[in-house]
Length: 273
Image 1 (cartoon, rainbow, N blue to C red):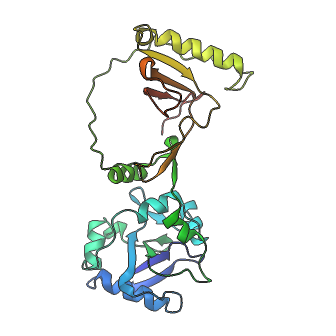
Image 2: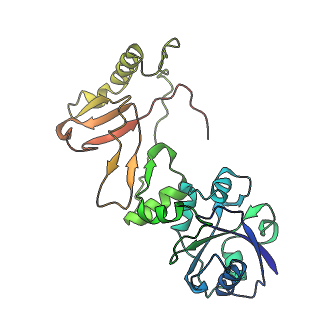
Image 3: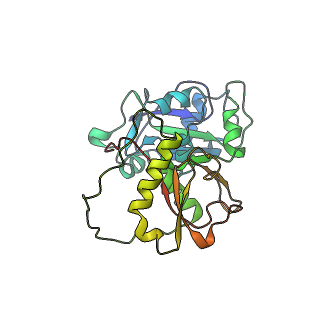
């Protein structure tokens, strides 16, 4: 017997426990979830979609911000990424699910965690739900480049059908180039600061720029450049940066990201993550 804490996506209420034998199937878990919420869940148990709740490779703690927003009926982008991943198969036993997801021994389901996300796909929202649920189906999400998690990146790659091809390059570490000396009395977007860092980048990228193919474009403060809606993609994108390195021959102000080779975001302090 194992106790799994389940949370319905879009419901403004706490997670609830479901006790189930590990020899039973995911289909039985769906039945138990519906039985726990007979008045609120009006669709057939078979229509429930179940997903493992996790944060990275860890279980989702109930005091995590993501979990708190979930119990407030809000749809955090990480929750959205989870419920657009692999569904639990009704034919798998609970033991199969636990083994496959590394939820055994010291990593077995515990209290103060949320283990299963429940999506009710074919039911009108009741008074216990919020408007967040239909919004999940209708609103196209937007992703900030700088905020993408590994889970979200993997989901985007899978959605588009991309194949990653990352070349292995041995780079020479050059410590002779000193960091840009920030003008401490001004902000990053101050005209003097911008002129200073553009001159710094121009100096250290001169080999590339002088070949005539590239140009530096100062886009600090322009929030529209990296905001993209492309009908070929299942999502919108948005983001900010400070400088773009663009192919001079293909720069086109009417076409977003035309000729962009490098997106540069400046940081006064770089901390190891």
